[in-house]
Image 1 (cartoon, helix red, strand yellow):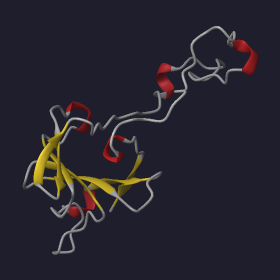
Image 2 (cartoon, helix red, strand yellow):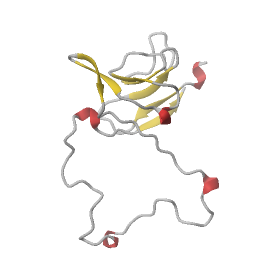
Image 3 (cartoon, helix red, strand yellow):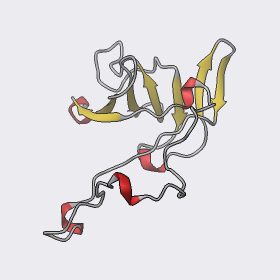
Image 4 (tube, helix red, strand yellow):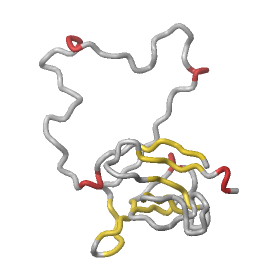
Length: 136
């Protein structure tokens, strides 16, 4: 039932990209369109990146495959991480959120910083992108 297909749209990519699970092929795909030639959401297999897995994105393991000028090859630099908000039932009422805002003076200048001082050296496919869920 295509009414229940969930796919994710990248919210910080330079172009429109989606992440979706294709039931028939047992693969997660990343590409510009999750809608297949049949007009059904999550039925497209046209993508530049995929991994063979079950439907649970949080349990995906192994290397994603990426299509390059040399054909399909594994790329260990591609990483998908799931993040979710804490459930309201697990947070005490009246308490601050799990991610408090730090003040600039809270970290001494001799402490290591969480922000890298130089840009990443990985290829562009290793950049972190954020995908937001979409239901159709």
